[in-house]
Image (cartoon, rainbow, N blue to C red; front, side, top):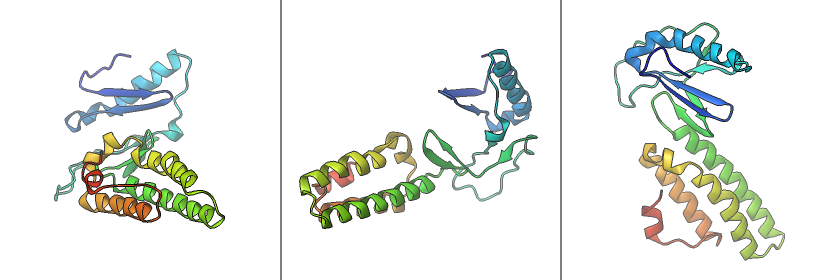
Length: 180
């Protein structure tokens, strides 16, 4: 696919497509969106506009409000977006992602406690912890870990310490400080 503006970036993964346009080139949004729609039709595909959303990323520490461009027709303007399973806010924060992952892990920890109360072997519980909870915690962590806040990291470390107290994992202090 060729873009009418060479400074845009198109990221595709299976049926997900992300068009990234720098702020200084936001006037090209309509043209680029129409270009993608035309490309899809030419390739016997259909762009589902109901699933399309627009997000404007800004600096996390910016105090002055950004003059956001007017919304494109048929597009909903959102303050956070889930990209390949990772939630990112318009301020480039991943705290929402961390909250949802930690909530999901807490539910899984409750299930493990229930299994333990029914007499399941500790070794099996440790295997379940590694395959379910550690997998959730590490999914795409190399992409989002650098955008976490100190508070996000403290919550993650507290969850790991709780798992260690429950004998689901064995950690040293070195593990906690050398996270992804």
